[in-house]
Length: 313
Image (cartoon, rainbow, N blue to C red; front, top):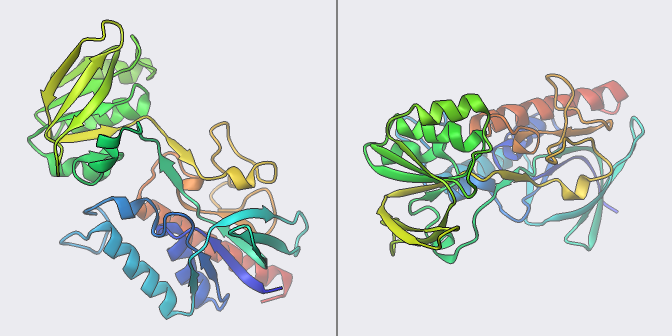
């Protein structure tokens, strides 16, 4: 059976940054890309807020460059999905991972960078227009809708926060709330209600996203009266939450109620020795490429120090 020093699960900004640092520390990391090679950024057409790209960069190219940088230092990137793990509870213990249900590998350290997936409504028109005006990140993509009319779906703190963020740059923001009340905290509700260019529609759901190549409008349905109405918009933001990709770690690693991995203090250490978590899988607060990359660096340094403390490095 193959045994490696450092296994990195996931290939977003966190996974690849961890790989760059781990490779330079001679840990000969192996990255398994997972179901979405490149992570959430591959669904973001333009990235304008990552430092070092003055003209901006599109998400997929940025991930290709991160991969090439990791490979330049000796990272091995493999297409594959880790389907099962058996993590050791002993210091210096060996962790095992099963890839695609068939191949088992052993690792001295594991860096988990499996990220989180934005929840979408699941409408065919919404899926078709992802990247063409449908987005799950107002902070990432809001800028492209400067001076335009947009809509946002959601009723929690994130939706309220993103609505007020968009209201600063867009002429009008229509907020669709499925129930007759918002779930957001009172403070956030006040902020939304006190913002002139946000209109909140209660008991309202998306019926259809209109437009062929790009978003041109929205057909909505009132779920009490069943009445349908349309508004012209150029951007639709879905803010109904994220799902951390942590199912395979349940029962082994400590998580919060929403399934995000819990790390110790300012480190990336999980509750098991030699297992580290970086990126959106352990961060539901910021969820940005640059913060994910930062924790990827931390995880590799934590892994290197852990192996050093064993005298194995």
